Image (cartoon, rainbow, N blue to C red; front, side, top):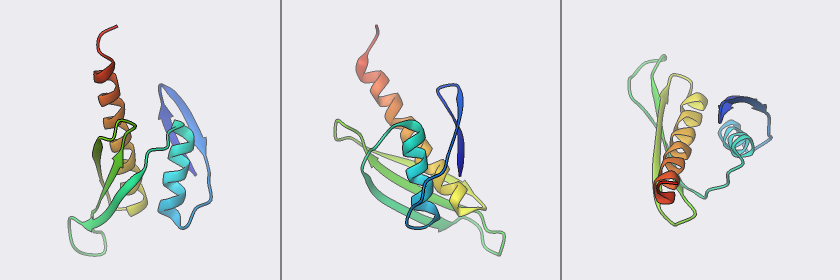
Length: 103
């Protein structure tokens, strides 16, 4: 189950996927009503030990073909993955707003 704020509104959803990371990404896509191609996903450890901080990177491609990199860190790798995915989505949203120019 993913719970997140989207454009000022709290949304919650659950989706089945091929493992917890896939399900998390699918839930975020559903809640944000987005579907950008996932080009790359990587996981690494920032610190050592059983309480290691995990770092995730997600590369997405926007509708104009531009690639963005999202990053997230957290001891729970699923949370780190979600943070990275949301970070990439926020970058895509920022790029889209810039391309629209002043209204």
